[in-house]
Amino acid sequence: MVHFGLATTDEIAKELAARLRAHRLAQNIPQSELAARAGISHKTLTTFEHSGKVSMDVYLRIVAALGLSESLSTLFELKQQTIKEMEAAEQRRQRASRRHP
Image (cartoon, rainbow, N blue to C red):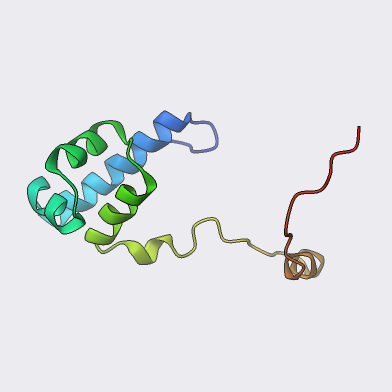
């Protein structure tokens, strides 16, 4: 298993592709069937499973075709731990602060 905090973007992409491939195999879905469900070419799916490199749209299509969309719902969700952090989160930022030299 890859430690995402220490991994390169290529390593993370390959790990996510491997996880989705494992889900495909666990559900006993051939590549051709998953590609058809996702509305992508067989070659695109094969490339993804090997390299992890596809567009965000294709990635989300594969996730949806595997029935895993709900698992994305907490991805990158802001987690509040203290009252101060919760109050700060309520004041959602519209843009980054200006950097002062």
